Length: 613
Ligand code: AMP
Image (tube, rainbow, N blue to C red; front, side, top):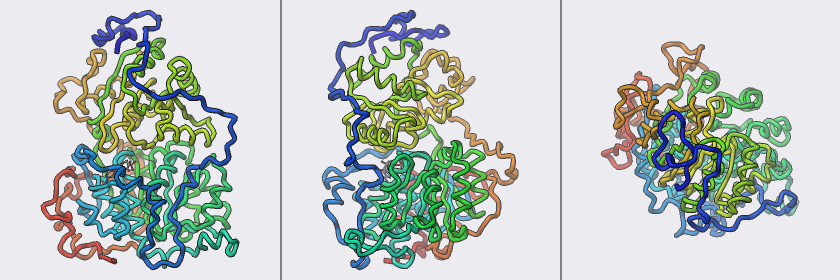
């Protein structure tokens, strides 16, 4: 970086910044970007192009009703879902980093991890779908969650986006339902019957409900579900606010076995009993549970849990959450079976060693110049720029477009859903490789090949603090990739300094001079670990004996839990890998990187997963 952006005033600045002006005078930028970012374009807010697709209208495999258990291939849809065979994602990726993440488990049953998808008792169609996704080996969370869900236990999984958690629940749930869909799923007309008017749309009676906090995440989960449902009888749908409800009603009216929803739109549809009922529900997943309970969804959430016509005892519950605050623990206590299993993958932050983190001291008034300077000096590639409020998102988008001449788009919660989807589409497709966004809107977003994350504003302590920081930088360096995260640090960010320094140390990054004073006394920089505080003690209601604070609510598993405990699960003796010790809280944290001696990963003598196929 060429220009200086001011000095910290307290500490000597980084060498390359020290020469910079300490006045508010803007530094000079390189005249040209270092590479080709593509053509800047202007979003036309008056455009009313009705043909544009909504995320929720993405093509799904349509079961024609006549086939046997194995539905025929559909090459056109297959290419749409998975890409052309030689272009499929995953091939040749280095995913070794993610496999060294620690996994710990707790619960009355030891989970014997699976080490290969081939050992997970998957239906051949599901296995093929997994392979077409380009997934060679299960990620740590998948190694544990797939068998845990297969065993029929309720589950809490502490893992963040980027760990492969969506597939960790979708694969086992859909796989279990595949053999039973004919028996369990509601009647639905064939697409042909609907088109000809021979049959009317039906009421949606999903077997699986996935609730998540943001629209973008809902669409993303739906896109993943479309792949795993390919050639199965299971029809996925997604409903979320902001997009036309009429389209969504039409979609669910064609049959809906897996419903992905944001809470507001779900409650709206639940209130119209002729359109949606949860009476067949067998699985409920709450994704990003911490985020959901932290926002304004409380009332909707209570309605979904208590107001649906589902039978609690027949439903297997799964909570996925990046952190485990008191509100999530209360939810678990109220709704999960007392013998539920818990899996925790790594520590937030510890997954980020493949992200190079630069913290750069900048005077607030020089931030814009610094941003342009940075954008002009890096190699072009998908870049997300985080700001802390909606106005800043608009302004920085304008600035990059007008002053920098770079193709940029932006997203925040005041934008219409159409604008948000357009922005995401342009960003994903690379038409606008620069996305300016507020943290909230970007929660959970998974876009491949994000090369760079820029914290134009670092998150404040009131808005997520260091947790938000790790979420944000986790948008780059996704499975199999490396990335760079550059954060502009100003004197106003001092409250974050201590946590930030610790994260830098834990992930073996350089601590800049102006943060040196926050290095904990006596800390060993070569082996620094942040002490884990999932604030279990914050839960006033939790008993001292039970750090999870969960009570007795219902027995595990419904009658369709699928897998019995017989045959090899036992006390964990059959597991190819022991994970922790019973009764030791999170256990000792066996590394999922350890490979089992036995091929197939320790299913035990009597293979616990019956092979139905
Ligand atoms: P998630 O944590 O669910 O947002 O997943 C993060 C990314 O990892 C997504 O792009 C997935 O497609 C990808 N992914 C999930 N499981 C695997 C796997 N076993 N191997 C490679 N990539 C995966």
